[in-house]
Each structure stands twice: as structure tokens, then as C-alpha cells.
Image 1 (cartoon, rainbow, N blue to C red):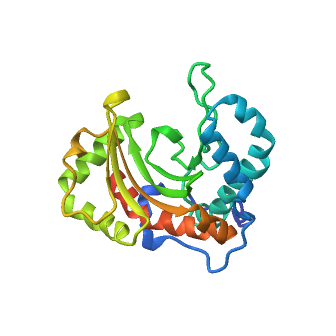
Image 2 (image 1 turned 60 degrees about the horizontal axis):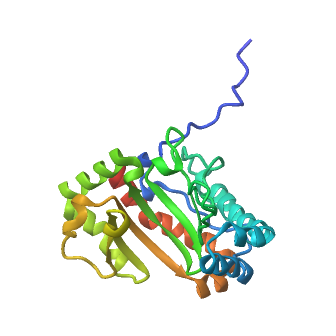
Length: 254
């Protein structure tokens, strides 16, 4: 008697950096659950920017759940359904992918004015991996790629890769900046010695600060009014932006 077919076999998951952007499946049709971020969500973040303290957070807490966190979870779910699962990408998409509004400031009661999320490789953590992040703030919605000193070995690798192939890196970054709404940024130092270098125009060469930076961004901002206008289409725009930075992600990690 022949063996029964192994019906439960599933295609294996693929390490994220092994998947080139031109091998990605993207939807022909979008059936999203995310309805958009509302004016109420931005109002909460405005007030937390004005009063960044736990007392204000407690006043806002019902709206934080209904108007901010729940819509953001639906946005996350749509990315999983329309991108991560069809492409069998080995990302953690559920546990600890979201930041917290309350600061970890040893009881001082500080509060952030933004909420962000990033998928990460299962062997790492959100703050311990190269992050393709999605962030809502009073200014709008940012999507981009970041690597920083929370994971120094990956930051050192990225800086080394850039130093070894600066023209290749600029060929990845400059076309994005040239579209408008994108920026390249480095930061370093701390306290009164903190510094930041920002480029909003295509670069002829890399900043001298690269070798001493503690983090680097390539990020797109979708302004607040635009976020309100596009509503659920923010999922498609977010995924398009992920595809834009995906070659940079692979550059850092391969």
C-alpha cells in the first residue's frame, strides 16, 4: 500500500535578507481591515507632546487603546497578511513588535508622543535587529530603516559595508531622497554632546560623521494631512515604502 501523501507539509520560511525585492509578491488587490488613523489619534499624540507625562497618559488611556493602538494593530495585521505570509518571511510579527508610550525612566513618569513597530528576526529582538519601522507621531507617519547602537555588531557591520562600497550605498539612498519626503540621518553622542546630521538632498559623498555615529536612518515621512486623507490606503503606501528600503536592509545584512 503506498504511503499517504504528506498533506501537512508547509513551505519553509525564508530568512528575510535572503529574499531579493524583485522576488517579493505584492498584492494585486487589497482587502484591508485597517481603516486609517483618525484626527482623534493625532489629538492624543498632540496632547502627549504638550504634556509628556503619565498623568496625561492616564487621561488619554481609553482613546490610546481605541483610537491609536487598535488601528495600529490592524495596520500590522494587514502587513502580515499581504506581505509577510505570502512571501514566507521568517519575521516575528506578534510578540513585542510595538513600542510603549510610557518611558522606562526609573519612575519619573515620562511619556513618548509617538508609537512605532518593527518586525524582527526571531533570533533577535525588536531593539536588537536592523529595524524597518513604522511610526505614528503628531507629525504624521514615518516608514524607514534604522540600525543603531542597541545592536553594536550590526551597526558596525552596516558602517563597514557602507565604507567598503560607498557608491553602491549612495545608489540605493540617493534616488529615494531625490523623490522628496525622504531623509538620511546620523546621530551620536548623548546629553549636551548629542548631535545629528541630516541630509534631505542627494549626496555627492557620505558625511564624515559616519564612522562615529551611534545610529543611522533612511526614512520617509507621510505628513499628517496626507495620512488622514489616504485612510486605509496607508497600508499600501507603507508596504511600497518597505519595498523601497528593502535593498538597503539586504545591503546591511548580507
